[in-house]
Length: 471
Image (tube, rainbow, N blue to C red):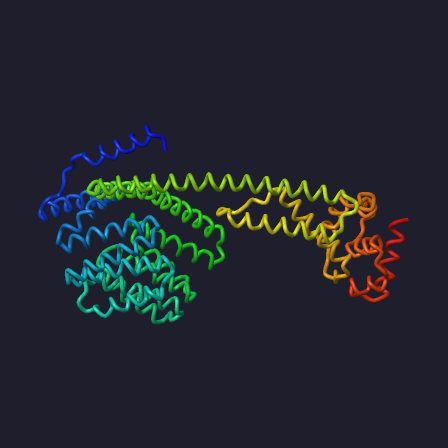
């Protein structure tokens, strides 16, 4: 890092570290500020200004470690969880709903506790975790006699939904009717009637489902409108009126797009929330300014060490490239000498490649196998194949790769013979190529049988094909 850039970075840290800020000093003032933030958030939610609502709620959430009002903590976490659920952030919503349940338990208020559980059940159902939702719903029903009618209605609606999933339609219908009878507002009534109409559709009673669907309150509640449209679509499809079912599906898609736009707005808010969290982290960093400078110094030291290490790796890489180039030149020179024996070539090349592999191990980041390195590897393989043939080793498993490697080596050892074998107009098979190499090196037919591990008939067939190809 250049010195001017380093100085500018340190000065920036000092400016931020020395900036005075107003801090909450008492529990009473913190609680008052949290109340103000929460009231503002509720006002924004009423006007569907969810971004500003989330910003106010997150600022209120920062004050929770200072205040001791569990009821206030319950309400703040409840609304944050609800906004995340509306945005489709189910896991985040579930985390906040668990915090809501914790604050509700601390208050000892049974209505708060059950309300927190109801929100958890809704989120779990939306996540497809109906087993866990069913478990929590049963725990809430254990408090049934002490609940408000709307809470009782909601829990019974959930029970009816689970019974419908189990195909216990008769019991589900009775439970849904009980939920409708206990409903005290349009939302609770609409939810009960929506579940009841879906149960009727499952039973095949389309007429009753239509009657119940017409009784669902015509409110601005998006959930009720969405559920009503879904029920209408199922009803029209069951009647065979696919045109109207398609029109209803279009309305559902339009509503889904509208909800998606609201979720997109909340996506923007999540960016603002992350910025807000970073601001909170910066305040923590201001209290440890000296530690930050120490960390910077350590990072600079580590950067210097890494730089030196990188330069040494580069130098080692260049040395390895030069060594490979020298190996390639030496091997080409040896191959062009007519009196060079294959065994000697193999020994020299094995020693050189062993040294290359040792050098590769020293490169921490690995070695990119370039064209020159690959050529040496192929050349070594070709020499190994030719040496295996001349030393009468078993080559029955050799195939196309070994054939190409042997041809590459032969081009340097005996180019006229290589040109005879490497005929693109009438290419030889690997076995035919190895047969010709054996002939070239004076290997008898009996020895060929041992090298190929084949029968005399197979060897005669190979020889016959070669005569036709090499005419």
